[in-house]
Image (tube, rainbow, N blue to C red; front, side, top):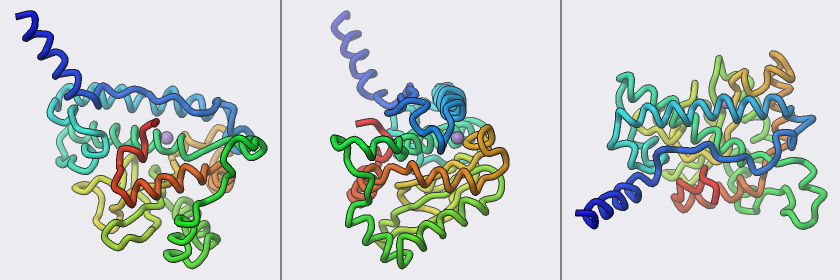
Length: 247
Ligand code: MN3
């Protein structure tokens, strides 16, 4: 009996490899993006806002056991329905992916002065894809910034890879929705997110008050292009979990 019970426990652990979720640590200090994104904003955003999403997701998944065994990206793709539990999972699973990728897509500017770290440049493949979709990097930057600036209320603006056309696009999603949510976001907003900006006021209000455009301009200064280039490769390969998880 003991052997059977032990086997069952081990099986259950491997099946439930995804949930409960944990708050992933930042790969730099809370003060690492100072002058662009301030320490207090980073601390509260990570330890309060993102952490609350992780806790709320784990709570909601207790009422949806079959979803707790899915990978987060599979969960986002398959999630369907408007009931209370599904809505809680939608908001918090979206938030968990969105924030986990957001932190990873940023890096301190002092990294640029450390020759041991990769230079903050886009891969040739990503540059080519940006040029093909937008004409130039500056057109892409302007398109993305305008979309982020004009997003009404709270949400995210994304650079997505569209597998159907093998091309990049800029889209915005409300609240904590994510372009992977096949049954929830509109078809034209669907794709694989490789770079997203959080334009909820909690992401910038402490430092720049209502000046979202200043936040967007600051955010560009700390985008981690080697990471976004890697995200692009993983999007092409369909390695969706690699888009948010720590290696
Ligand atoms: Mn946020």
